[in-house]
Length: 151
Image (cartoon, rainbow, N blue to C red; front, side):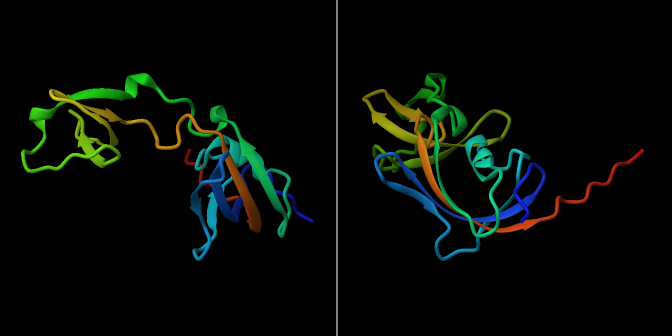
């Protein structure tokens, strides 16, 4: 039977949860996730977790922070002046917002604290700092995608 190797395109069903059992994502009721193994399309621990599987295999993988979204970066938590928010905006802790940086890139942030003068905004990935657990089922292994090399 064909085993998953780097460069293969695979389809998997998955259930992702935190170590406390809280579900953060699942492919249940949706098409399976398709990605090229080893291409960086998914977090490293997920890529490594499917290696060697054959179609029909089910596996639970534990992904440490370093192979998931990394640790929380304190430099990604910034104080933003309350005066810069629209007056009619009802800010709440946990609120998700999109900020735009000086180059026009959109950065998703979460409000973590609201003070008199500043609002603390966290631009870390929501799963940064978390160990993750995935139940995965390999549905399909496709051929490695064709690559056209130009002279």
